[in-house]
Amino acid sequence: MDNLQRLSMEEAKDKGTKAFQSGDFNSAEKLYGEAVETGLKLGADVSALYSNRSVALLRLGETLGTQTLRLALAEAEKCIAAKPDWNKGYFRKGEVYFALREYENAVAAYQQSLDKMPDPHIQQRFEEARQAISGFYFRQDQQVFAFASQMANYIYIVGDMHTKECMVVDAAWDVMGILRVIKGMKLKLVGAVVTHYHFDHTGGVPPPPYDSTGIRVSGIKDLADAGIPVYVNKCDAEAVEKKNEVPRECINALEHGDVITVGKIRMQTLHTPGHTPGSMCLYIDGSKDGGTADGNGMLISGDTLFPGSCGRLDLPDSDCGKMHGSLQMTLATLPDIVRVYPGHNYGGSVTTIGAEKRSGLLKTITKTQWMNMHSQL
Image 1 (cartoon, rainbow, N blue to C red):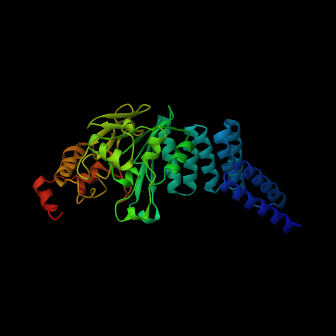
Image 2: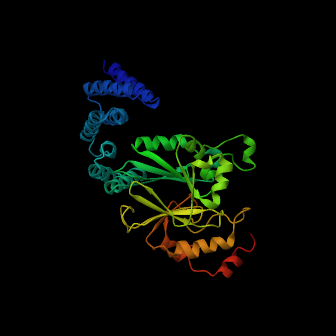
Image 3: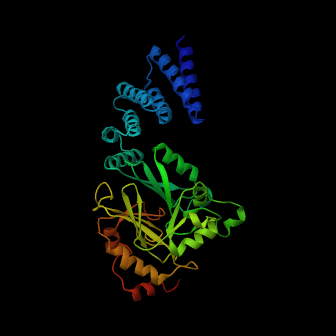
């Protein structure tokens, strides 16, 4: 009899997982519930089933609202009670609190999960919840696809958790995935910012030899077609318009020093030519209203600055001399404490202005020395 019940429990669990994967969260929740009931009769460990049921209810709650989210929270609490030394129950609890916008409780739950077992994803969620307390939302995601695995692009989402508005920076490769993340955070996308016109940051048709594959990378055209305004430096605006078929009326051409606002968050645009004529960085001053949650400030650097290096300077419209000015006269003047988030995972996902001044390309160098160093380009 026990064997039959155990088979019944496993069958319900497997069916629940298939339903969840297909997006049928209502069926998944019910099937996980059936598996829990059978498991309790057997005296089995049902902590994983409580966890699964919690996340199914969380997904339902994103549509149905607070009452269902409270049910998801209850399942997370049951998971913790069943297996208090397992980090997953605390993580589920944090996820529900985040969805309920109870960010202080989310921070506490994520911290409990991390205390049980360090995990990079949970650490990121902890940071996001901590930032959300002050209203500042920031997310870094890497988009890697088979034929572009070496590109290791990053996309960024910056938003105001109070107004529930956000902007995406360098939206390419997986626009539907980006939109799912934004929807899951209950944010409204109000703009798409482009650090420069290259296809791996904007989408569109890849350059040779990949153009022969017939591939079109999703990107800002998809967002512009949906009525999302596009922001780009004026020197790259024409290239974005032509290469991505983005209507001119959707493009906001920016000057150096222009400020883009999303809710109360202020992103100052810094024109940093070199990699392309219109390359730009986004600076969020942590010392001012509309800045980062921790007060340190951050820079989204596109392909201008990476940890220990900079963007390519051997391309047709690259300019080595202008890159020197962008690095030495613009970025090197920022406070050392500012965190730098690059456009690719080339050498790391984050650095600081201070670190690059000490051992990177923000270290003082004359233009003559710089040009000699790049004389073979």
